[in-house]
Length: 53
Image (cartoon, rainbow, N blue to C red):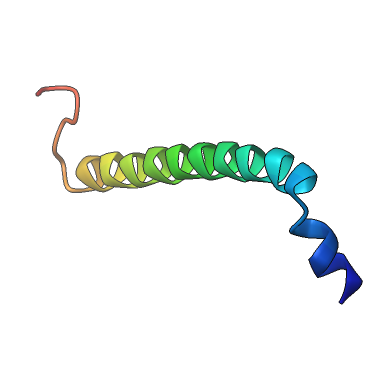
């Protein structure tokens, strides 16, 4: 349990919080792009031209 107290030191948190935020932002964008891709593929399967809009 020593590692938990080490993580909560201000020096570590100052580096850890921005890194986690950046990972979360890129993860969110990747999931959004994947969802949009799935919607586009479903439109194509249903015979709708997704570029016609």
